[in-house]
Image (cartoon, rainbow, N blue to C red; front, side, top):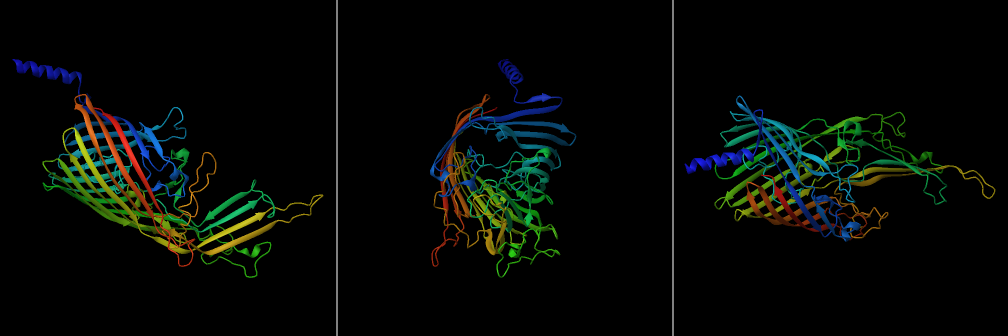
Length: 553
């Protein structure tokens, strides 16, 4: 009798406080957490709780000489899972978002009006025979899983920083994947994923035309206009009417084809093992007549004019034009492998992952560049590698300790022979009562020996240790004469989570994380006296994060 009463009480409590909502045959499960977080960085990044790993400043940047304290609730996350049974398949939809997006009116001055952003938005059909089809925004299939190749089973690091940790394979974008699970012991997957291209390096060939507002002898800059042309493009600014971000300086890649990812995962009974491959397709448009000119038309031309016509086959090879423009393609890709073991009565998780390839820098958490450009505008894919080692110790049901060490490395891809042309046109100044007329002038400077690309051995890093002067009260300097192309980023981090409460009312926990981030650049001989040592700048940041979180039950 007593047992029946207890069962009735449990049913009443379950009906009054359900873990999920049942609606028209669909089970809806809400989720997420509320976060009150802080971060201290001893070198400022002008960032929020999310760390821009490649943006850690060298000493030349004014921000490197001040620290920052950030107080944020923006990682607060909301999610909803809807599931239902349809014949031999379980169909589901998942929505997850946080407030780590910034609109054009977002600010920290009064209302802190940051926008809700999508993290995951996907639909899925999981069949009883082991086939799983998923489409929408989701974690890339290159991200490691805890078991099989299952959505919402990604093996994410435990740290507070929402950029996760250096060396972690990180991308959330559109994907359409097909997975086949064989008795939960072995899985094969294939995914089509939305690509983008990140460009690195410097020194690309350009023509700069300056229409000055005064004679050369007069120091007047107001009224001058400058126009620049190059010999290639790969990304385009976002179009507001197309609902893209028109303020993103990197723009959007005009995609040639989706990224292809293949993955195999094994769960033999001891450990979880993965092997995957990525194939990426790149395309840019080259304008061989985009960087051409001659200084023969100068007001005072040199005795031996310099003419750039090697790549331009136009009938007017010294006139900038789109003649001969063509598309150029490159194919990149890489491979990765990971392993995860749970030992000591499931209290300790050990993991390791390594990834390497050409043109896949974007898949690392630091966002190293995928490619750079040669002097003729063709793409040179940058070889990168990243890896992550992890240790997670679940000491008690209330306390979790963790330690990670990750690194990301980019090889050199430097070239010489870049063309740099500057044409300065000065308007004529008519005669006055006190002065004679000054005629219009045109002066052209041409260099065909420029160095550039990524990590060039002749790059100039001589100013990386010298602090710059701010542009104005709202724009600190990032320094000058500091190429600083990244060779290696490393981050050891450690921390803990303590659960004050975990039960039917949800979970309340506190976390503390410490990270030591180092950014080392490729050495360069530019600006160094003959026989001197090439300069290799390094940036360091110490970061301490805290979080007080409440998780929805």
